Length: 65
Image 1 (tube, rainbow, N blue to C red):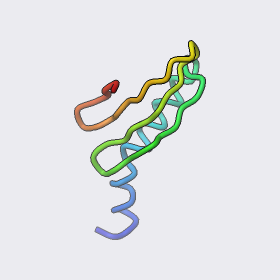
Image 2 (cartoon, rainbow, N blue to C red):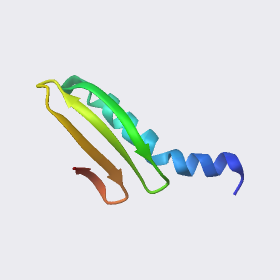
Image 3 (cartoon, helix red, strand yellow):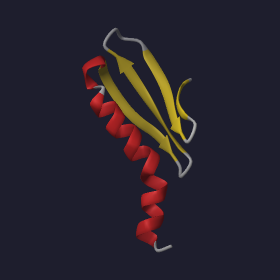
């Protein structure tokens, strides 16, 4: 696998999570992908109500921490 393909694999969950957060922007005050690997991505999200949550996206789906 070349370096470009390797970075696309490593970046997959980060890109998917960032896109999902963008699509749900109507309920989110602020969001930031804080960590990602080739196996998962984690984000900190501040909801419109002011509550802050962390979520993880992995092969198993989304999980609220």
